[in-house]
Length: 140
Image 1 (cartoon, one colour):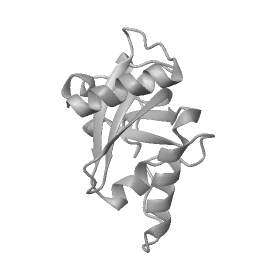
Image 2 (cartoon, rainbow, N blue to C red):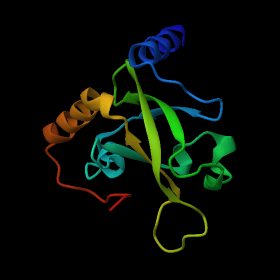
Image 3 (cartoon, rainbow, N blue to C red):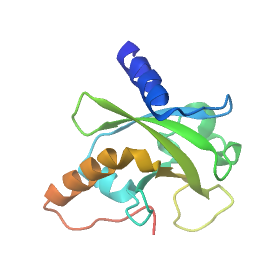
């Protein structure tokens, strides 16, 4: 955890960003290519992820309405079987709440900051290396 904390502090200093007290910090582990494929949002300018309610911390699971569009979220992301966790800043650009009916999955969509393009390229290279076809997406 100390390594992740120093990574966050270093990234914030390097980008000269200011995170407000209301910014959320989420630690997410995506453990399969199928999950990565179904949650990745390549149609966003800088890429992004849709986080289903079940992937969010328990206190958030109760209500996606605790999040608002354009809220900042600091994301600590661990991909597949890698031990490294990637820190990235995101903005909420999509909210699917419990009021939505049908086969939609409840959750939030996060748009990566433009400075996080290496993470986007890493995700896209992992998906490109995947030989299985496109599975069901939880987004568009």
